[in-house]
Image (cartoon, rainbow, N blue to C red; front, side, top):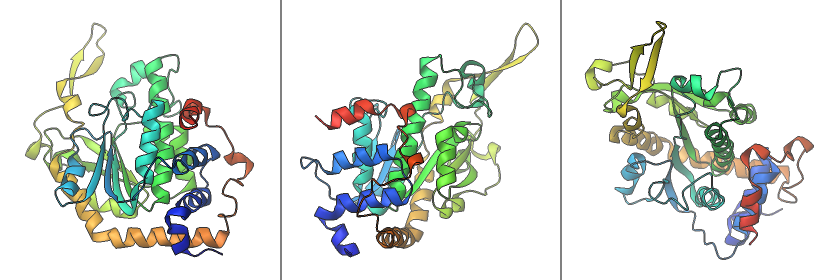
Length: 324
């Protein structure tokens, strides 16, 4: 049976990566996409990215790593509209390529667009805990659902790379109730912690939930709410309509609150610095478990329930793009 070192050679990266994804019960569709990307000899991999931010905004977390000389990637549609649009064929392929190019035990922070998932938007999105996909007759709701399905596939790749991944959402977001998010929670240990961006210098309080495959994420939470110390601003304006009902409308500070304060980036970096050896050890353990399971023989030999097409992620055109 091949050793870990043999599997980690350039020629063995493809087989080992597919095997680890299979070991994590990943669906066939993402194995197919990973295969097409890793088998493309025009794409070079050095697996040296130490930090990646998806939906990066100002790149506060990557900036902290970059200042220390680490290789980083800021995936942000405003910076690169063509290649950093996770809903486009090219953009999702690039997102997967970046995840595969991460160093084992690296750090990744992602904040998928939350606008249709927070409680202020429930009236128009139609989302509820018991109906998380909302009013799917609305294109913008459909797109948000597709985005989450694709992000959940990315998370599985990150987990297979031993990455300390952190997914951030406002505390009121219903995203965790998305069926694919729930499926992820059923397939692996997902840890969560409540924290306040205002405690890290944000201009708004912004109660936030962080999700991660690593329990170390909890070290960033647990602070007491301190709204008057840092954040005099509110994200919504309240009004009373003609019927006497109170309505909340997002104001100009709502968009501003999406940018992470620099202190949050330092907090993430501190956790990574203190535990990076643990993250690497977990990745090696996953490799050993995968080798012991013998999945490198045929990573595509999956249980029937893993052969689902994931139509909700709309990946047919991604496959066609990669086959060109």
